[in-house]
Structures are given as C-alpha cells and as structure tokens.
Image 1 (cartoon, rainbow, N blue to C red):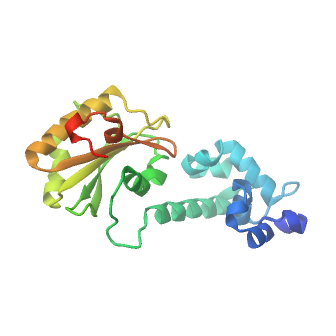
Image 2: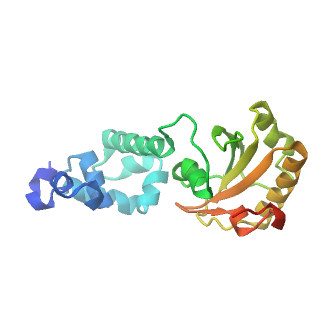
Image 3: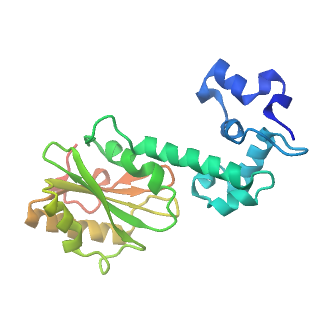
Length: 233
C-alpha cells in the first residue's frame, strides 16, 4: 500500500497545507488528504488525480453519484463515503449563516444561498426565496422539478406559501443543468407572468436568478422579464 508519506516531505499535501495554508493546495492534493492511502503502484495523490479524471474535474466531483466514485480503482466504498461526506459538509457550510435569517441585499447574496447545491443538480429545479420587509430570508421552498414553462408553472402555487409565510417579497431561483445560465424565452415568459401576478397580490418579485455551473444570471439586472420601471440599481 502506498501512502502520502511515501512522497518527499516537500510534496506531501498535509505538510504543504500546514506550511502554506489550505488555499495553496490543488484539488487533487485536497482529495489525497481525505482518502489518505493508495494502492499498490498508486499513492493517494495519484488516486486523487485518477478520480478527478474519471469524473471530469471539480464540477464532476460534485455531481457524480456514489457508484462512479466506487468504480475508480483504489477508491472503494469507504473512501467514496469520506469524499461524499466532505462534499456535503461543504454544501452545508455554503448555505449556513451566522444569523438565523440571512439578509439579501444583492443578487450575489441570493445566489450564494443556493449556488453550490443547485449548480450540481441534473434536472431543472425551481425554488422560491421568501423575504420579509427587511429582506431577511424567511424560508426557501422548492416547488418544481423538470423543464419550466408557462403551462407547468401555476401562479397560485408560487405565491401560496409566500402568503402563508407573510412574505413581503420573493426571489425566484432555478438552475440550468447544461451549465449555461443564459435565460431562455420560456424563463422570460415565466418571469413576466409572475412579476405581474406579484403586483396584484402585493408581493414583489424581487429577482429571478438562473443558476449555471458555478455561475448565475440575475434576470432583473439584465432587464429580462421585468418592466423598465421595475428595475432598481
């Protein structure tokens, strides 16, 4: 069995982490620290590189199912579980807030709540972030899975929980599994319909965020689906 300790001390990921800080390590080095040991002919760092190649890099590491991890020679069930647990911890940290109710002051704030998780989804999901009058998050609810269009989206379902939560405003969020966050014509049509419905219900649709692969588009910022008078800097 080959271990990280078989490497020269200057090449060992744990030693490099202690000396240079975690930010100086490559993705493969971070994975090597988690999996700890290698197999005959392949040390932990080489196994980490094998895994990244198998799943297509960091984005694939996030998206790949447990079985794909296990299929990489030398990874196995235990190492797969360790890696999946670490990824889930990262997801939870990404959405955690020191306050019980994070405050949304920009599209960046809204996207940060869901970007890590939603950029890895393999189907389209629509979620609604509900806000109070101070733009504090009351709750985040998932309403739809699958392709979004005006025939599928029901206005009443979008706003029902917002009314029950006494929300002053909402932010729509959905993902594009292709990784390209460019809004589609259907996205724009859905947004227009919901913005107008929100006005009648006195619940403002603050924005519609489209999540791509570790990136996003604010439709309001781009003026898509919102009337000119609705836009704010």
